Length: 406
Ligand SMILES: [Zn+2]
Image (cartoon, rainbow, N blue to C red; front, top):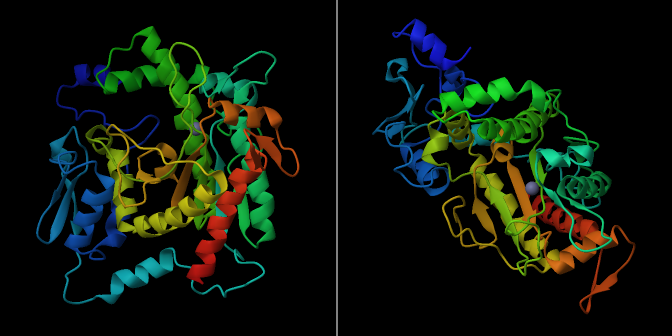
């Protein structure tokens, strides 16, 4: 059922909620447990410093008042009212938020273990994209040069994930991969999603041309449905302490794949929501929940440690977001805030990796070389295979982080 037909039948009926692709209208009462757990100044700081691109992006949707925040329940229907979030008073009850934060994420009760520094830390690893025959659905594959193997991001991230699974487990961690092979985790298939894609376009007041339906269907399958299914699986049963989203980057090319001289590294934490995103009821709910869970602090702390070791291993320069989609939130130039379905769907701190440009000549050569043992020379420098190097950067950062925290 689409928004248009119900509106025609009953002009008084409230409009269908504005939600993200394959999203659903949130249960605002789930935020009740956060009443009076955060001061106004902390809420406003997290919102402005990290989560919203700027304070114009949430005007009319979130209103920060003296003792409460009013959060619109349904952005396209003022009659649905507001969720009222009461702030914690500054002067009294100081211990409350601290207790909540400890209960949620700090693992102080686990004793330090010098041989197994990651003992009992539950880590979800999300190898970005899908591989095999499914690469056609997310456009993260290309061939360059004669007699070369095709570069497929979804298969490369799985290789790194398998190495990490082995190495982090040896250090005591409990690891779960969101996918074990190069097949989708979602049971839905693109052909089942085209009607939903058309409804989505209508809801967003976009013209449902066959081209738009096709590209929306693709995203609904390879991103929305796939990532939501992975996150559900991990959030419900595994409930990790942290999640690692593994990706490889690529620099933009023209009409067909080509080599580029850019090669860089950046690490993302969740933030930088646009007005379009904050207007979606489910996205706004998820953003506010992440603020109230104080995920920012541990996410940033982890990212700083991981940026250090990833830099040491890969020797790559930092990447900069010139436009608006990424936001600098600290003086570390490798770390950016950005809102992606993957880094807001896992209900724990999420670190999202974007090292190496796959269409850089040396990276391409290293992908062709595969998982060799020892070192090999590339352009005068001896290097580990690219998958082990990536995994070693992640492992070293996690070891440093948990050695320091415990
Ligand atoms: Zn990717």
